[in-house]
Image (cartoon, rainbow, N blue to C red; front, side, top):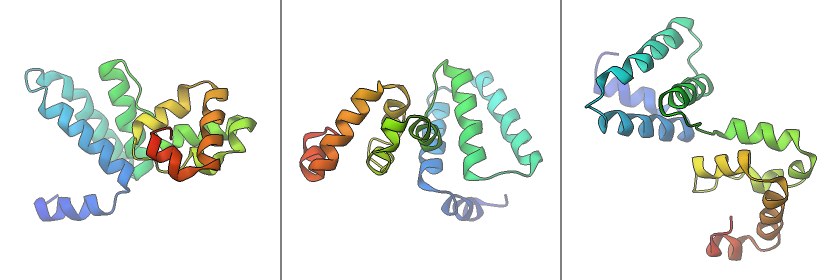
Length: 141
């Protein structure tokens, strides 16, 4: 990368979820300057991904999620994770469009889809499906 202009160009080609994840990681890095060693692994992962030649929004998200999971002991859930769960559960598949909608909660929503009991997700999807405007206004989505 040559300069800030080129960086902006690269970021514009990424999808929203990747940019949000990347921004979240950058915020965490900036907030942790007291622990510079913890970013060595991220740099190594980024170099490995770049060397592979397979740099896409999907591979970038996967690399960042793996790094965050190793780094904080927590998992970052993505749309892909949520989609896989919906496809694996027939009860969820019936409400696919509602569940996989791009809700403003972002990663929190994907985590909920990946970890909540199926009955809870289906119940919420039914409410949203019956009255989407009211459900969103009530924060039930």
